[in-house]
Image (cartoon, rainbow, N blue to C red):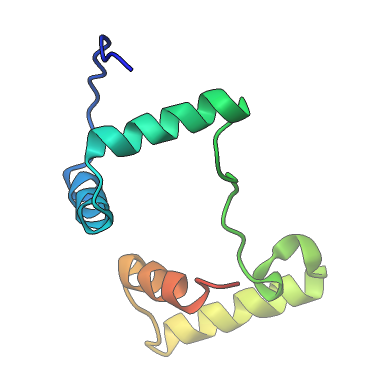
Amino acid sequence: MEKTATLNLRINQDVKHNAETVLSALGLSMTAAITIYLKQIALKGAIPFELSLNKGPNHLNTDLMTADEVRSFLDKGIEDIENGKSMPAKDFFASFRRMHAHD
């Protein structure tokens, strides 16, 4: 198939590097991988994988909690802060993602 179109895009440098590392191990170039991706979109008429939002564990979903459970959860958090049991948000979210990666 003749290649006559050009695709220019900007992407985060780390994302590009990480993808190139994986693609290299697979014996694929970035161009080949993107071509495969675009062919799959055309073939399926959709993105070729599921897109969804990461969901937290049910015990942290306030939509599933009673008002008393939410209040208790918040009270515990305030108590932890007052007792010095806190950490920077960046550290917390990194830990949270690791802990719930497979939920």
